[in-house]
Length: 414
Image (cartoon, rainbow, N blue to C red; front, side, top):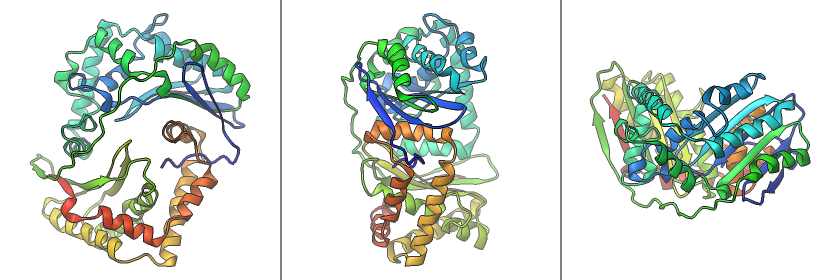
């Protein structure tokens, strides 16, 4: 579920002849945003390609058939705009924010980056050091590294377990032809969504997209993702030379196409969402002083999902804190929310969504992802309706299905 569109106005869409889908929201603003979202990420790598999706994303900005790295960066920045990119387990995205009069410039640049990059070997050699430094930065931060280690263990022997950054050994072997082959196979036009939010007529936008994006030949996906099925159970303790313990516990959860994902988002928010009044924050921090930082996360993928709870604490308090967490999870399983409790939980989540939607730039990526995965983007009113439809029984059902202690895995950095 992607909470996104605040607009009551219906978005406009079209599919170009090569399969690239366009979605546009027309808004009155001097600033516009657009992105190219590709349904390609870390899970689409082979064993010899570990980290290649992320490495390729970096290398997209290192030169094209007509521009060097400086000219790519300068193209939007010279007119006050921005260009950026990111990689996840299932997607790669190139985006830009800019003044409305530079729409054509932004679309042309994104097209050049995505379709015309040449991946010079000399730039690959330099970028290796940058990504090695990025890997070291994560390893030096236990509260960040523990999430990667947990996912790698939960999805062991599956591509979802691939670390987004790869390994120092794997990236040391990448060369120009490797990246060219990766893009040729994995950057498929029928798996791309171009999303736009800005003050431009849709017909004008389509003409620009046809002029730049539409010139590329259709390249349809010819491979299928390997579905995840191999669930595992583990409890790992890793000795770290740190003053603070970091712990993460979790279980497999719902995919982004499962209707149960909706009440699960609400449950996660009740337990340890961003609000200081969450149940786990009140119990562990406010009542018992066990942890300064506790959070729950629910991540959906194409064919599975992951629910986890992370907290930091003194080492001698870890086991007590874990027991305290499972007491709260048991309450969710055994005690049905009252009418007032459920109403307050819904209002809180709806308010968080509304605040997140108050910025057009915040809407860009979830709108593109929603259109990629569902073929539509929900309006704020539709999102509210989904949340309001959640019943107390829905909450109990997902809690009883997911919060089984014997099925939880854990990693403790002590």
